[in-house]
Structure formats: structure tokens, C-alpha cells
Length: 52
Image (cartoon, rainbow, N blue to C red; front, side, top):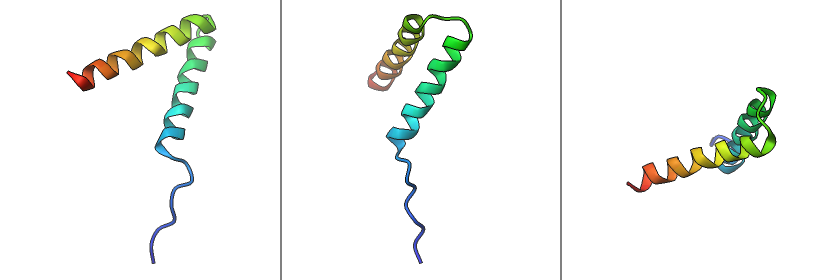
């Protein structure tokens, strides 16, 4: 018998983690704009690292 599929996709899991990171930055005292900027910088660095 096969295992049931996980109802949470990798994309949904990643989105939830980014939201938690955003909230952590805001709760730490960053503005929403600053938190979004920091997350955007992390995503850009990750993309640059993956593409060489």
C-alpha cells in the first residue's frame, strides 16, 4: 500500500516559511518595507548562488 500524498506542496511550505521570516523581522522591530527588502535580498542572493 502506498503512502498518501502530503497535502502541503513544497511551494506552500516555502511560502509559509517566508511568511514566518517576515513576521519575525517585523516582530524584531523592522518595518514591513524593511522586512520585505531583506527577504528580497536573501532570495536574490540565493538565485545568484544557484546560477553561479
